[in-house]
Image (cartoon, rainbow, N blue to C red):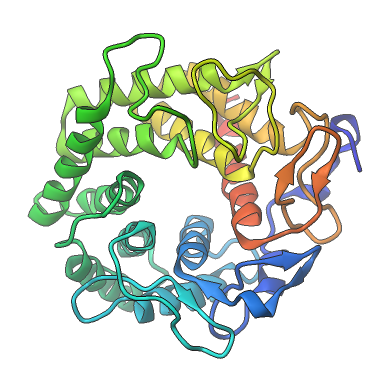
Length: 345
């Protein structure tokens, strides 16, 4: 395994490994090493992530546009007549769960909103807007579902600041978070423990603030993100929440660490910089990109330079060599921000 000092330019952003995991139906969720595990099938969650990463790439990387189109088709199929969303599809192309407003609903809205603004052509943008309008009348069944949906609503608000349903969704998501934020300065977090994709929560507040013009949402989001980054930093490097979560008195470092936590911090810090133009957020963003390149608690790179996949987890003495969809997309979405870092310097 390469250490941080041995990393070269081979781990640049490419969609090569994602192409290996994707067929004509969508991206497969899991991998054994570099190879897709067909028996686990597909999920809307990962196809939404793939769609967003591909749209942000804008077709610059080989294969990214076709992957984005496949992923968007999958998500469209996942939405039922009521606007709720199914998540899991078997490899035999059979939906194995019921429509819901769980996280998959929020991620679908995130992808639709992103495609409505950044779609590869007019048809994709129009159809994504219709799908967003259809599904956004629901409300998420959990906090993170609402936060994902808020990211999509913020994209729609950028296209049309007077889009009432997007504004209402942004308001409802932000108020749900704000109602849970604690007055305890030592632990203001809206949950008893840090759990999964934590930086999504302050990022949703920032998106809601930008989309509705609420300074209060932005300030609360910046405060929460500042607290989270401090909490997730140890000895000058990111040391993110492990799979078992992290409470107020839990020690650092702890394992296994997942790439999605780092990607969440990168996305939130990039949004914070765009809102504030404060280079402090670029410093935190740089910690996130460095984590994948080996500046982490184990000193190991989280990118496979041969496959261009991202490893599933960081342990105290090694990496999880499986290269599933979530971890690879998390790596790509983080390293996409390096263009911002290079431009700022």
